[in-house]
Length: 271
Image (cartoon, rainbow, N blue to C red):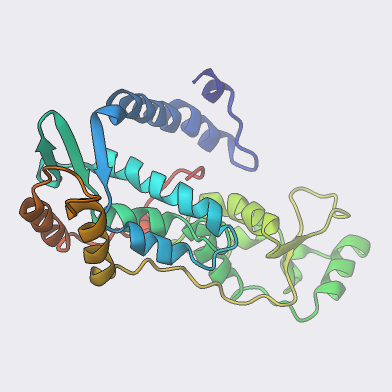
């Protein structure tokens, strides 16, 4: 893990970069070491696997997501495991993933855009604050006529847009606006103007800017039951000796767990 010590986070204030290196990365390292040590001792059963597969359908990177997303759920299930969600068969321990585990992963990622949920929330807020009807005129005024960006409705910098973020904003973090803008630019949702040579980047919305929808993971009980009957409970293809009634009770009891709300969580920018 020596590479973590030299990590650099572009467009992030020095103090926040120091926080990532000194606080967040050691925490991540300890979790990786923990999983490396215990991962082989446990088997993960995710009853909601078919729901995840329905969720990734139609995504731009569906094939890759179909392999990566379930693995992320396994990691979350390991980190969130509770004794009441485990069953033992001899020396083998099986962890039953919960709707919470799956929804947590689903809320961290938007499959169709590759954006974090906070970046999507920022973008949907941004299109209510910035115009896109006369972009060319504002770009010319700023770059060629030295017009103040603050006085423009169609272009902005990280600094100018931050001044519009109020203290009551809960769905994204003001400190990460630079990261959001970079993500949005990389995904083709913002335009950047390289002829602007002052501090910071000059951005605008694209001409076809529109609100982004958040992909929702739907828990379908019929899909769950059919998947478990065939792949876990079945005497032909299932897990030998699995206590069916106990697993069914675990699944039933997990329905009462609260839905995770990542919108308001202070997640590190690399999530």
